[in-house]
Each structure stands twice: as C-alpha cells, then as structure tokens.
Length: 453
Length: 140
Image (tube, rainbow over all chains, first blue to last red; front, side):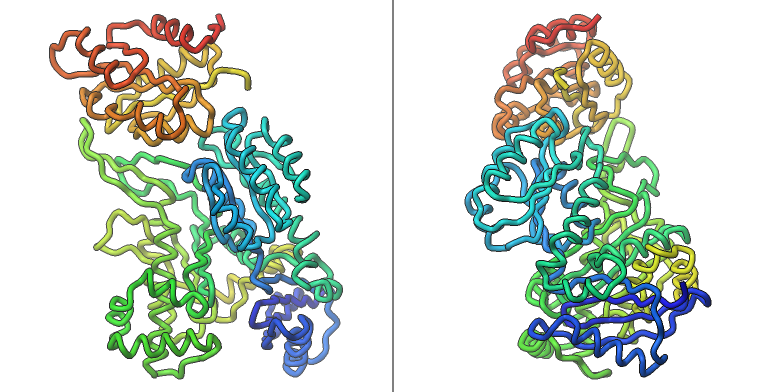
C-alpha cells in the first residue's frame, strides 16, 4: 500500500489530499467549488484534475472520505435534567461529529415538538433517567416524538428500565429505533461511546444515502464518515504530544475539541457537576464567519467588534451587510473588510472556547475561600491548533487564536494559559483523521512534521 | 434496581465530610441505592439528582451552623420540580449556639422537612425511622 487519497466533501468545497505512505508525506492538496445544484462528484472530479496537474495520475490504493455536505449530520438531543442526561446526550452527539441543532430537557412541549419537526434532524438522540431512575419523562418524550410526521431515526440511550417501552412506542409511530446503553447509567457517570458508535453506524447506513452521497460512496474504499469525526480522531491521535485543543472556525459553525482530563490546576478546588470526558468536542451553531454572522454579532456586539478591529461601527456594519448578502465574498488583504473578517474569526474563537471551558466559582467556607469548578480546566493545555479557512488564510492567524487564552479580566474562566499556538496551514486535520483509520503511525508522523511538534 | 434510591449530601458551603461518609455507609449497608453528592451541595443539585434517579428521599446534612439559611425553600423547590412525593430529611449540627433541640426540630419541620435529626440522634435511629417512612426493609 503506497498512495492514499483523502477526500472531504464540504458544503462549498471538495478538498483532496494525496498521501505517500512510504515516505510519509503529503504529495499535494487541491480543492474545487461544489454547489448543492451540481452533482456531488463534479467538485470531486475538478479537484482530482487539479491534483493530477500537480503530481500526475497515481494509482491510489485506498480512497477515504469524510463529508459535511448537505448541512452535515444534523442532530437533536433530548434528555431529562439540562446539566445531567441532556448534557450527556449532547456530548455523545457532539463527539460523533454531529451538528447539534438543539438540546431539549424535561417533558417536550407542543412547541418544542413542532420545532423538532421543523428542524428535520437526520438523527434524534433520546435519553433521560439513570438506569433504574426516572421513566416517566423518556416515555412521555417517546410518545411525543412518535407522533411527529418527520420520520427520523431515533437512538434511545436512556434509563434501561424504560428503553424497550420507549422503542415500542417510537416504532409504533413509524420511527426506526436503535436502543443502546444509557448515556448516564449511574448518577454523574458518562457513558457516551455506545451512543457515539450507533450514530456513526446510522450515518453510514442511512444518512450518506439520504444526503445524495451514494455516488461518492461508490468510488471510495471505506465508509464515508462525518468530517468533524475525522478531525476528532486526528486530535485524539495527536494528544500523545501533550494536552491539546483545536478550534475549527467555519462559515456556519465553530467546533472546539479538547483532549485533556481537565482536572483542577489551582488549589482548594472542588469539582462539581458532570465529569466531562477526556476527549470532548463542542459545536456552536450560532458562531461562524459567514452564514452565522447575524447571531455572532448579536453575541459579540457590534461596538466590541468595531473597537477590536480598530474601525468605525458604521464601516463594520457595511462589511457585515455585504457578507450577509453574499456569503462567498472574500476581503482583499489590507482592506477594512479583512480586518473585520479577522475580528469575526477571533470572536468565534473567543466565545466558543469560553463556552467549551469550565468555570470557577468562589465560595467562602469555615475553612476559608474554596473554589467550585464545573466543566474542564483547560489551563494546562500545551498545544492549541487553529483551523478553518478564516483562520489559516489570515496573516494574523496567531492573533485570532490568542482570543482563546485566559485573561486577567475573567480569572474564573478556565481557559488555556500558555499553549503553543499551531496553525493548520495546510488544512490537513480532516485528511489525517481519515488516514489514522488505516495507518496511525503515518498520520502521526505527518502531523508532527507539519505542525512542528 | 428495585432498591430504594436516596440522595444525600452536605448542603451549602459546608465541607464536613466524615458524617456524610457514615450516612452513606449505613444506608448502603441497609440495602439502599445511595447517590452521594458529597460536600458543598446546592439545593438544585439535590433536586436534579433526585429527578434523574427517581429517588424516594433527599437526606440533607449540615454541620457548620448555617443550616437554617441553606435549607430554606428546599421543600418548595422540590414541589415545583415535580418531586411532591419525595421526602426530605435533615440532620446534623443544625443551629449554632445553645438552642433548645425541640425548637430546632420545630423550625425545620416548619420548613417542610419530614423528619429532623439533631446531632445527638444515633444513625441507627435515623435509618430506622426513614426506612419506616419509605417502606424499606433494612437488610441485615
């Protein structure tokens, strides 16, 4: 086995990476524009032609592919208590590479059911109750979901004592159901791997076809996986180099990955709430530099964006209007538009990493001041990787990434303090995640060299 | 999982861990399914744990004298969260100073606690009385 072709079918671009396993090198990369209207393979073939122009025609021993086309893997998670089983379900879906559209808790209301119907998720993950715990809520929710006209597959990963009854209810409503182990079998204990595998299997068996990727799948030698799952696997592999984080700023979403156990780095700290997994991904559907500009500006504030970019608010909103009208516009270097785009990317990084990170709360006890930590302490993260077009194509990429770091203004946010900043200049994370599935050593060697680790 | 589930913990900014371990030990040995939230537990944490686990009772400990403030409103919040049938118990060193035990019990009962166990009550007594309330047969 020598030459490997890694493909990433995105919603706007198809990207290809040719790898030589013998020399453990990336031979060339290429990308071509794809649209929803054209055939999925048009972009692929154009990218392949570009690749062949660079390195000639090669016999590829394996063709691997990831996809985030047609909106990615859209999921909704449903649980009982927001900080417990809902959060566990959310983490299971995120770690499987899903684009989480919403998370619901308690008994679903009519309005929430209507929102789920309108969102048309590819898969719904239903949890609720620890094993032997509450049954009423998951059974109520199964009944509500069974009544929806949208026939999405449902993964039941809740209280084992209610799972089969929930399945029967859903199946009676015409929903395909897979029952797996509870995402929280015992109180406070996460068990997300069974749900994660079920999501992956469903993606392969049903979603690839539903997204019109059959023709792409036919020419691949392995099953197509969700793009964020490939990035997740690349990060997991690279975690042997030290505690690691990656931020992927996209047009519609921003993904954050952390590979660290997140235990307290400060003194007198007690951990509270759900213990989050070593390998965690979060996805922010409201943060992105193109499609999500309105929600991003709502969160970051126009004045703050303008102040950080060193521009007049009117000038900033002029550019923002332009990007909202046409999401494909690219700013020329040195123009105010480029400064605004850098600031948008930096805001995505700052807000998404702050949401991903844990927080401290100060409490005075009879023994003096104590800290309560919820979520992961990222203070000890050693490597911070930035990826996504708006980061890697900016001359100010490192400054964009620095927005993730801890500041004196908010000492209670458990953000990375002094990581090494790495830019995924060659945009290789997805390809390396795919490659790690067939040759971990080669993927690790290539990433180590490309990232200088 | 037919065991009776109880949620226990030390409320507020209280870090006294020893009594909490004793209660955990006693109830687990008596055949209960114990969810121990440890020290520095908020009212919300007690309620969330009881919701997910379908617990029959919440056992609140307080040893540092601020129990009255920390426990106020717990019963009402349980009712609000749909846990009307969940019993709430409190025990420990509930008030600072030389206050009459009867008065302390009265105060906490008025707050909606089903039973109140001042610090002089042996764990066996608390275990027996709670088990009677919950209809739980103590494993010997």
